[in-house]
Picture 1 (cartoon, rainbow, N blue to C red):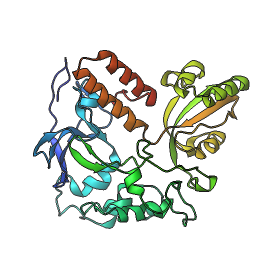
Picture 2 (picture 1 turned 120 degrees about the vertical axis):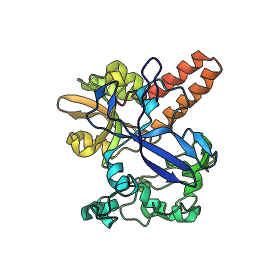
Picture 3 (picture 1 turned 90 degrees about the horizontal axis):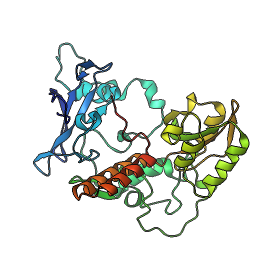
Picture 4 (picture 1 turned 180 degrees about the vertical axis):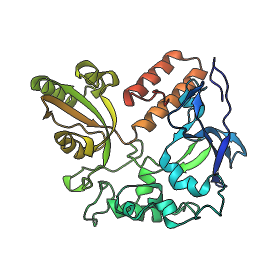
Amino acid sequence: MELPGRFSREAPVEAVVGGRRQGLSFLARISNIDGERLERSPLVEIRLLLGAHQQRLVMPPGFTPLRAASYEAVLGRVLGTRFEQKCLTCHGIPRNAANERGVQCESCHGPGQAHCRKGLTCTTCHNPHRDAKENDAAYTRACRNCHGVSSANHAEICPVNQNDGCIGCHMPKQVVNGFPMADHWIRVHPELPAPPHKPTPTLRTCVVPVSEFLSVISVTDERTANDILRQLESGTAFFDLARKHSTASAPNGGYIGEAPLADLDTVLAAGAKGLRYGETSRVLSTSGKFMILARMPVDFRYRALELEREAGGLRTKGDLRGVLEKYQAAIRLYPLFFARLF
């Protein structure tokens, strides 16, 4: 691994994960950068994998094809401790059988109380020990378990088709860096044709999220807050108004990142939990401040990544103005897109 103008460095591969359908990914542990020891030595998914279709080292989906210019890009994807605990306990470095209990239920699924938590994970739809099914009907049933009208505490219900067609509309097939896969952002695709429809209140989600990705505009007087809300309703960008008016969150265009609702002020938590993806709250008054919340679109990070890929294509053509415009658009979508991980 090498950064322009810096020392190159090596990191030993600690684990290999993947399989014959897509390829093998290599995981390395990084303990220091330029001699500075990190507080946590994370596992990193290296930027190249051995592609099963290509039979060579290729760039995995989700990684930028541009020449690495930051630690975030050159090292790869930093993996959390939860991944190590749940997956690499069994699938990582070979263990000494005499000193290990082997594979038990809780090796992967955690203690019993974890079964009481609700939330979408990979294993909601996939058996991690079997190849993924290629039958849309099986995945549609998984969708309707939460998004069906028969569920008492249902998630958001599709206003176009409440019974079928979930996968083709919300997870269409795509090819990313040569890898065929379904779009796992599970989102609305405005480019796909859909019959006219009108969302109704009864279709809104009944599930209270644990956390949300939020942006906030915070001002000290109500008149200014109401004026900002009117500008938002007329189409002015949240990013621009936050940069102009907000106090604490102005540098990031209002973006504050993922916020656990339990950690928010009760007024803000109540305002946030009723927001759909991409929606903006009314003016919320708390602790002497007047705030407006915006819930980020479900695919805001993916859209920023797509803009970066488009910038890479323009760079190869020498269109530097176009590159700058794409980067600016990416930052407006995801203000911390280019933030360093270390």
